[in-house]
Length: 89
Image 1 (tube, helix red, strand yellow):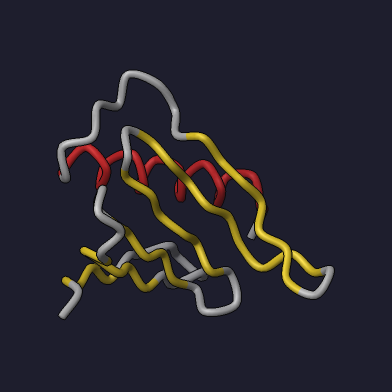
Image 2 (cartoon, one colour; image 1 turned 180 degrees about the horizontal axis):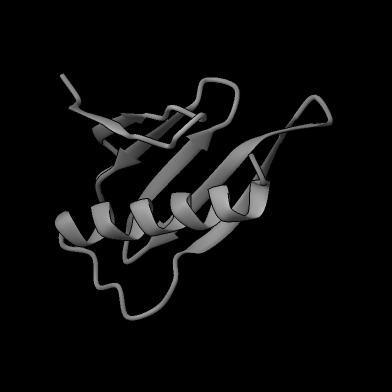
């Protein structure tokens, strides 16, 4: 799968879930590349006090509210990017 369309789909999903949690989505979230031991391991997205972390190795995005509590985790199928949404316990 081409990485750029995948990243665009990830961004779109993140914006949608941020909006569901009350985020003002008048602009794109700020992105930060995450590096662990010198290797790319994911991206962090932040907007309006909400943040999400896409863990590439785990094929998962975790969403956090303004207080830092995890509110949702999304498991991604990289073959077709069909998110399997589930609520945090």
